[in-house]
Structure formats: structure tokens, C-alpha cells
Length: 324
Image (cartoon, rainbow, N blue to C red; front, side, top):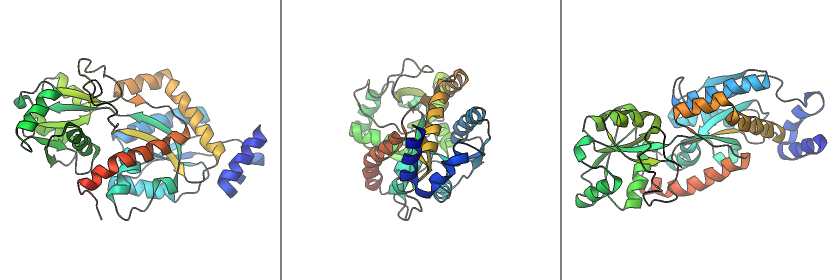
């Protein structure tokens, strides 16, 4: 069985499989580098370090986090794409870097299908659509009626042009056939603060942040953009419950490795990631962070990337968000 597995790895990865033959059959034999496309302390970094800490214990060898922030994930992604395909470099990626960037940048220095192999989906960050107290809206239907009565009069905040917090509201407006005006801010905190201060009317922010302000009465929650209702705002319906079935998830993360990484390494990383989701301490931490676990096969990463590229790409082009 092992010989067949190694043969399959060789066929898929060429010379890289030599690292997994003979005396080197045990993986991993040295520290693994986990590249995070965000500064220490950011949401992606928190997820990455949780995974790295668990894997270090399981592998009994360090999984070292290397932060490479900047350029909307391009710096980290292009760096990992050029690393040896030996199983010792992994990237925490996500929908923005895999499905948005190819449509946002004309000369993107990496291409997801060409440069990466999927390892596993990680988590989804649900979003919470909130409105300011001054609108008087208490439901998504209320807000839609207001928007139809006054096209483009309602302003929505975002963490920046082309950010997930921007695109998810644009997608929602398209589905509801309403017109809103986008007001980009320098970061999600500034955007949400503008809604709390009644300077803008609505925003879709990550659940872990927006629910705190909703429960404090500083904003009004209208809908959860996620697979299920959230324990932190149990009375707030999902978009699916409100008739918007199959609304795309705008906040998922995944693990990828350089193209050609041996199948033996991918399979081991995927298997341990599945165990990661079953760990009681990990479960508790993900629940605390209000993140939805996404155990998957390696192939699912590519499938989700292609699906969401097809979903969000036309919207990005329609909005003229290409950064050439």
C-alpha cells in the first residue's frame, strides 16, 4: 500500500517525490513554514496560529508562522508560489486571494490553479448585515423598501474598495434589485464606527465584531451571511431564511501549498487538519471566535476557488474594480 502511495506521489510531483522515498518516507522531518498574508494579530493570523500550534504538537516538529502582509495577499501568495514543492511551505489563503484577486489585478504574479495545490478548507467567517439606528429599519425587507423608494440614497460602509465587506453588500443589492451608494473606509473598524455614529446606513462586517455592537444596541442586526444562525444573535435570520438561497459565502479560508507538492504530504496535512477540527480545545476556540469549521478534501479547495471565481468575477468586472 505504501509503495502504491509513493508511486502516485512520484507521478504527481516528479522529482519532489524523492524527498519521500527511502529513509525520508516519514513526513515531516523538519519544521514546516506556515505563511500568513496578514500582520500578527489579524484575523487570518489568529486562525493560522491556532492551526500551527495544533500541528506542531501532532507532528512533534515546529510549524513556524511567517507573516508576509501587504498588497491584498499578493506578497504572501506570490512568495509561496515560488517556494519548493516539498511539503514544507503552506499558505493560509482565502476567497479574496484565490477568487477575487485574479479579477482585480491584470498582472497578478500568481494564478491559483497554476501555482497552488489545495490542502484543505479551514473555516468560514460569517458576516452580519447591520444598519444604523437612524434608518428605523428592523428587517431586511424594511431596508429593501427604503432603498427602492430612494435609489442610491442609502450609504453602505466597507473596509475598502474590493474588500469582502464591499462585495458582499454589492452582491446583496444585486440580488434584491436595489441601488446603494458605497462609502469605503480604511479598515472594517472605521466602517462599522460610521454606522454606529449614523454617518452611513449599513454594513456587512464579520460576525465576531458586528454582533458585539448589535447586542450593545449600537446597530440593528438584519441578517446573518452564513450557513446557519449565529449563537451570538440567535434571533437574526440567515439570508437563506429570508428567501436568498445559495447566497455565496464571502469569508472562507483555506490551506494551499506550492503546485506539485507530493501527494503524501498533501494527504498527511489534510488528515491532520481533519483531526484539528475534532480537537475539543480547537472546537471551543473556533466557537469563541464564531468561525464555522470547514473540513474538506484537498480537491474541494480548487472546486470552491473556481466556483467563487465564476460567481464574484462578473460582479467585480461590472463594478469596474480591476486594478491594472
